[in-house]
Amino acid sequence: MGVENSAKEGDPGTIFFFREGAAVFWNVKDKTMKHVMKVLEKHEIQPYEIALVHWENEELNYIKIEGQSKLHRGEIKLNSELDLDDAILEKFAFSNALCLSVKLAIWEASLDKFIESIQSIPEALKAGKKVKLSHEEVMQKIGELFALRHRINLSSDFLITPDFYWDRENLEGLYDKTCQFLSIGRRVKVMNEKLQHCMELTDLMRNHLNEKRALRLEWMIVILITIEVMFELGRVFF
Image (cartoon, rainbow, N blue to C red; front, side):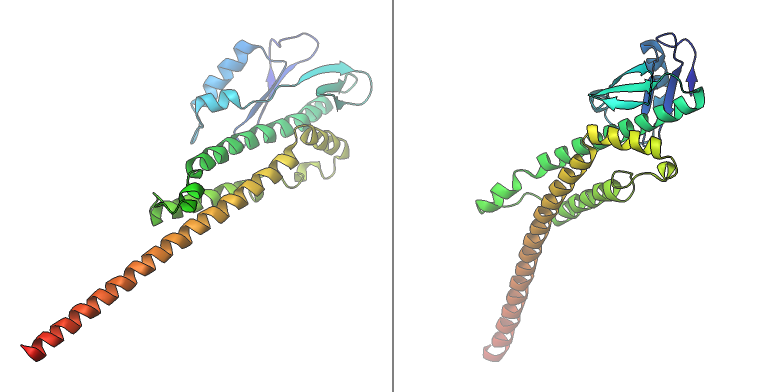
């Protein structure tokens, strides 16, 4: 999307909107950005916390140069000789990686919040204390983990290069280089390791609660049998 009255002359202001719920601004005035964000807020579905949205963002400087576009030492350098369409495509490639980084940061925050909610459980189990979670709550925790794992590994572009770049090697290089700079691959790996640890812990909790439930049922059966035997003995002797 093109924008009139760009922040700096010589390069048109551009905005990219992504289905992940992110917007990337190029050479756009702060006033315009705030206005666009307010418009987007009216169309949000299941929005994240405002503080989290403001905190989790990425910002890179860019300049125009002669020669091929590239990302060098955290600065985007765009080929000044490109026509408008090619320049937009290159900006899109950089923006695509930035969008993924922000989306991943949101999910990292969600996982950290989840970990915080269960961090006391290992110590409680170690000390032999009662786990203050019901079977239904444990199953809900497991569902949250599976949903997050699904979004990261199956319904996003974190693990594979999007089809858009298959026949655009130059753009794919810019996209991959930016993803590497933002450590997306490493961050996804760390998240999956954390998710695996959380899955093991929630499975342990579920098994622990299942054992307690089974033991309780066994005792109920023993008590019922005992009562029945007492009734039979009462009928025999009295």
